[in-house]
Length: 298
Image 1 (cartoon, rainbow, N blue to C red):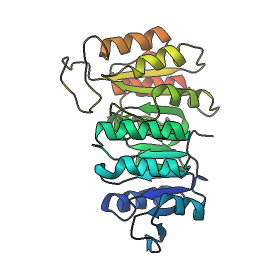
Image 2 (image 1 turned 135 degrees about the horizontal axis):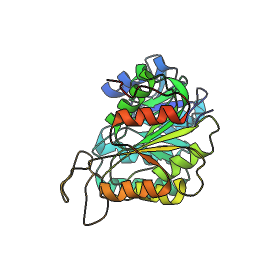
Image 3 (image 1 turned 180 degrees about the vertical axis):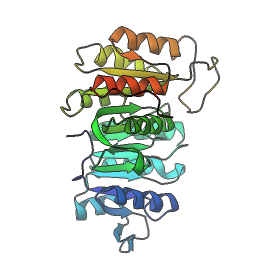
């Protein structure tokens, strides 16, 4: 079992004919993703990479029964692409695009909520259900099938943890990169609730970073409320000074909120095992599912 995405999911790629869309669609197909259509306005009726192309998401969904979309369109058009997919009733929208203007995302996020569909991202690596399917840019060769779930704000750290676990012989169920922008779709809280209900997931790695209060909310509302599975936490950006953005747009400390200390304390209070390094995360996750590793994956 997995969360959000399976090999049966029927996936659209918005921006299929662009450079990024083309490259990552080939990677997704190679991984096993069931890509059933692409959307590129003005190119409807053609094929690309052997995939039928439609002018609109509504047409693509009507003809193919798609239930997931991956968005690889430039930032100025990405919010409209999200809203087009939501309006068409696509149940899961994964937006990889970074640099979407803040107020465009405020509008798109509200639209998605009203439509009752799920959004992952933007500015994220997407998600991968190990051995089944992926939507996004998580490298194919680093995943392995197992019982650890991953949810993360950082793309690079997502890759590091996946690869470290795989090299240690510890596989994953689903790995979800929720993104690092100030306005996001699914939160830690929502993804953790999905992992809680997934019988195949026996432990969860949570990779947070400074800024916002999503980690604290997840600790209080989910992890500390009888989550029932081991949670291993890691917070990046511990040395960032207040007022200075570190990496992601959402990774900024303002006043006393969003600090690494507040997130670490919240996770510890909720019962999570907090680690200082990725090597410790790998070792803790392996031990949690009964597959101890040497913790030295580099």
